[in-house]
Image (cartoon, rainbow over the protein chains, first blue to last red):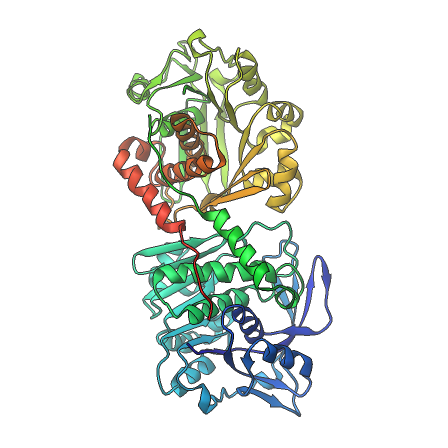
Length: 309
Length: 309
């Protein structure tokens, strides 16, 4: 059940109330691939980096089963760089620097051997690039999921709507859902947004969990209550990666299995925020993840039986 | 398994973005009693009203199995009155009027036949009054739960701490938990607050659900995603009433049963906000409640099985 991810592989510099980093590895594609690799033991990625990107990180991705034939390396250019600073509440951040570099003219070339991908995860990129990927696949994947952000709603809403019309699952946060729909109630927002095309809508609410809407059904996955959120960067991509990695690995897109996939994504995201960047995702093993998933089961499962008297 | 509630029976006047009411029936004790009556078919209440309180509402409470011998009626005085206006986001409100009236010198007299209460629910009142009730009970109840609010943290923190030291379950919202503990992380807050006495802490997060902390365990109950919250007044009291009514009626204070009790409380609270005041709680029947509880089961239950490949 082949999985193809398209998303940025990049450098980040992050400042939180707990400290700051120099240039570290980031990018939606990186987080998605690392996260999905816990479930999907081999996968493909289409992305682009510059000559300044460390071989060590490419080796790490390879060692996790990520095929790099679709990762363009532009020797004479520089890798995409983003720098941001989180406010004290960790829910909001300011972008300090955005250097598009290789991403400015990114042409998502699909290697021939990636054709036939059954699961496609479109990380946050311009909606035109996301749509180009869909159009270049000779067979429509079984499931297409996409992430996006308010930036594209502000400057390219028509393009975004064209792309949304082609996907199955849209993954956005609550603020973005409100902006995209013009509705403050998430239930109302979910109806407006699904009318744009996606049959499934996942609304991420950060520390308040995530909602999955499909037809008349709704599922809620909690976030694990944490003592400390150290760095939220990449948590949303990690969630999406865990979600798609789980679906691709189990090859079951029923609503019941999507619930499990959301729990899997939530569990991985809960690790991601514990340290800067991709550090925790690189440290943890399958047993750590299984234990964390069991914490989610304990957190939310109950058996509703009662006899009033 | 006798249930005793102590809490205000009052008048409210409410303004929300959807409309406004004249004086309607409100008060923590009223919401708690109406809500718990869905599970506990007979119960006692200690409270006070003035001569202006409508007989019709007393008859309604009686018809729900609420014994009124502990409800003092001060013929020549006026019932407690609160008036408030909700902001557009429904999460914050301004108090417009507070007339304590009969509540100013409320002496919570416990009728002899209420002695031996096994479940005690202390609605939001001054911590001195709450403590007086505990001290006047000749036998300690099996489970004592209390609600409180930031007002008492501001003006009577020492008294509040003395009362908290005597109870088993504290039920507060996230903002109050942060104020009471001085911690912004709810996990850290839960440790600080439980060190004050309560072995169980429920933190209500409004539209984001509720958390139950006990020892090393934590349970999360979602809120039902609603198209519209019409009037949040009394939702917290309704939650507490459903919680205690469920526990008293099942007479089981295990952690597993507390989970169910929180779902029961959440289901009742989800009705409460659909119309002004106590209106929805008066309209719905047992079948409506059972159906709503099943919605909560569908919303949060999943079975975590997978085989990666």
